Each structure stands twice: as structure tokens, then as C-alpha cells.
Image (cartoon, rainbow, N blue to C red; front, side):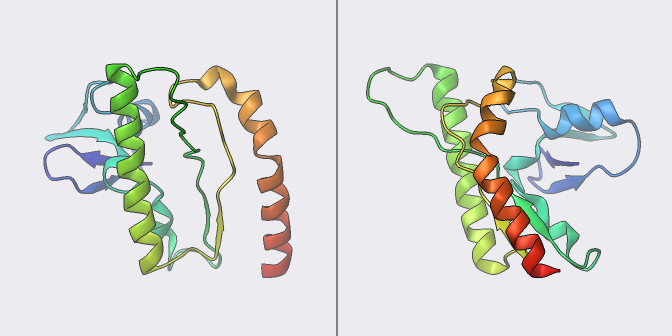
Length: 149
């Protein structure tokens, strides 16, 4: 799992130790969830430093696959965003911009970005909707894997 050090901004790989604190740290959205103490560090969502950490796998894997499930956010011009809505959208934009620059440097062997719409960051109850929307991406991944093998 990847989190980010709140003060240094660096990515922190959590690859040993207790699972629950690692999960909490890796998804501690700033402004929504409190940072998670890890030794002398305060950790927040890994998207602050490395929103799609496929780069950590180069050299350790024969084939690096990145699935970007960040989804699309659209302005429907019907509702004014709440404070949290602005915060979430800003975080999403920041993470997206980081990823765009990272992809310019080095792409994974396979990059898939399902078209996920109308699902916000904390709407875990919409899992079935996400799975349905991701079906075309599943087929894209199968084709890419067959070609790579």
C-alpha cells in the first residue's frame, strides 16, 4: 500500500506490519480523515504523492499493469458543490495532473482506465455500478494480456 508523508510529501510504501493501519493511511483523504500515525510520520492518502503507483513495480515484475479507477467528474451546472465536494474535486484534479505527468515519463506495459461515471470517492455502496461500468475495460485488459503473452 502507498501513503504519503503529510509533512515531506514523499510516498511511503507500507509493505509489512499491520494491515488495518496501512489501509487507513493509504486512504486518509486530507480534510476528511485524520492522518494516521506511523512511527514519527503522519500519513495521508497515497494519491497526494503517487496516485497510481505502478512505477514501484518496474524491475520486480515482468509485466506492469496499471488500472486507473479514479473515474470522471463532470460539472452538471445544476448543483453548487459543497465544501467537501470542492475538496474532493480538487484532490481528484491534483491526483489526475500528477498521473498525467508521470505517464509522460514512463508508462506501464498495460494501462487501462475504465469509464467510471457518477460515483464519488466515498460512495462504496455503488460497487455494483462500478463493476458494470468497468466491463468494457475488463475486455480491454483481457485483449491486452493475450497480446502481451
